[in-house]
Length: 305
Length: 213
Image (cartoon, rainbow over all chains, first blue to last red; front, side, top):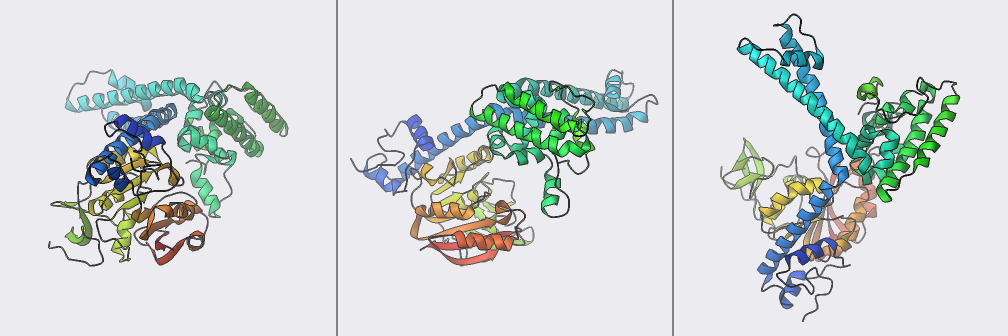
């Protein structure tokens, strides 16, 4: 038996495809060696061509499995769901505008928006143009319903994937943060200063290039603790919130325990910050169950991603 | 439409007249909707940094048929062309999403071995990758010089490092020239043979050819 120490095929039966894939994924060694020649010498493969065939099968199987595992992880599914939710909403709104333009030429009473689309979708078309208008209205309604279903899915999934983060941020904002960071692990590894401005990349880069002041908040603006804090103290509130959200994301990624004390610490901190302006905000009780409206972030010029 | 022979290009890579322009091309299964001419498919220098290196006439030392370790394979745009003209080609990519697209590219080729691995941790693939003639590096991460240093162990004595330094991956706010200089300073165990800016194909990218010392 030749020396094959360290090689992915060492001690492996040539027909053990599963074992080979596992070795490719989990094996380690410090230095590369002439693996093809060693494999032939040791009898793992008849010649280098046969070796490369086995290597090809093993790397494809190993990489396929690793990709599948990574991509079906809960946080990946959450990221796709929240992005799909935003996409369906954007497209539904665009189509609803187009629909209002068209329908207005045919029905003087046609309104705008999704409610108008629902009315139109219920009508009986009387001519070919009507058929198209009514059909388009149905697509808008379907897309809006799909968006609601996606939102329900996000609200159900986020607390499973990131319980502390979802409790503190609300499930939809939690999902957005995970999506912007590119996954729960990436979010957990980001400094809280980065979490604070996630979603405000344009403003951040304008600042880094010396063209603007630093953004105070990104998507976390939609959180009650930022939005309903006096503008003078919003930066402080955003920093405090981002700090706790980062810790929550880290707990969710690394341990998965529930840490309700994080919320209590945050509540206390925000109360202190708001006391500085003697303005407890219109909604001083922490109310993280209710997700603030999604378009709130875009009210704040310069911080939209 | 006759191909021009070009001694600077590896065997298996040719300049062909397509869409009224002279463009690099290799023979293989199309991957990203690139224009084709019979069995030849265009290697778009605007989408591939290694393509831009060849287009700009750098001496990459690539002759065709060599063993290659490609770090930062992404969805396989460039590494597919490499596998078309090279020998055994090991493609390392760290992110699962682009690797999903890399898989069918590898399935369509006999000599392309995909690995979902972190290029900063060569010990996690040294049990698979053999010593290579060319180490191609196109990783969008901080510490690009350190990646090259750690992966030097894979290069044969007469092998070549073909690295593309992306200034924005190191520091978006720094002057790219400073980033390039810092990269070359931090490169250790290599003798730099040639450097070229990849403008206008790729802004703020420096291509480096080096050999192990």
